[in-house]
Image 1 (tube, one colour):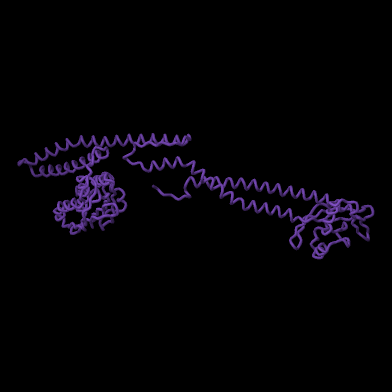
Image 2 (cartoon, rainbow, N blue to C red):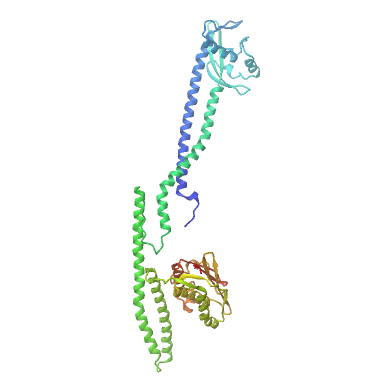
Length: 474
């Protein structure tokens, strides 16, 4: 199964896209809502400030020598409103000069001393915001009053603390800023869950596809999900598998038929060449050609027989006769049988302990697999070398190891050595009689016995083949 980073998955992209879009929408809505609240609160605040300021001015009586404030006849609420302005008002003439008044609070007097009213004193109408030295935010309304005909017109600047409004807006900003990451996290979590549920049918199809091999191409996927997209995917997949299975069956049948058809003419050609070679009057040059032809025919016959073996095995014709067999006994027989061939190439086959271990399998097929591997080690070992054969128990498996110190296999060729008719060095393999089918047959035999085969090799340093077969307890 191919592993991939979670960041590159469709589920990750869907969940994050879902979360980011929702967060952007919420942020836009929240910003618009904040702007609306801020604008409305400012408007309402100014309206109430102006209304209360007019009440305050209407109770002022100003003369060139004194300023008086009267609350007679007012309701308790209006009295409180006027008293609220007392600490935060100042009176100027139209030139922005402060009119002396003993009603000014110490707070206002301090602000006047520090020059914090510099911009405010020149205002004759409208509103103005002002921040005191202690950080308090005020909103001032500027109202004209007095007698314009007698040039005794004044401007009353009345302020009100905006801290409560500012605090409310500040809380709204904090909530907005902190809510976006929370909404993003929540949206991504919900999106991850929903995307997982939506993609689950596709994951089921993928898991089924991962277990498909050439042996079970007739598998059809069934799903309980009724969504149109899922049904369409399943139908398309099943249709593709049906076509693939049909194509593989046709190829296998062709291989079997071709191998069957080639065996008879090859046998006839071999027989005719052998008869011709027995003729005493045959010229030497013709005899050499016939001998070469006979070698090629023998090689072709082995290739055809191997192809037929694989075709029959894949079609299920070859049935393994499973029974407990002693692997050590098979290895001893094969080492004794192949020792003569090894000595011809100045090689030595060594055994690294052969304990009595058994597997459940077909004696002839396992013997053939091990014979092919030992034969390959002899063919591709350097003269004077050693071939090591080992047998040991690894957990619940029996491990058979065959190691040589020959020419080795290049790393680029290792993934393909079990492919049919593939030879890492075609010219050299041909001179050694190789057909490119031996390892394919070995792989089928091992997998048919529910085992595994591994090959480790380095050029000019040799090759190690390990076969793992399920062990049978004695």
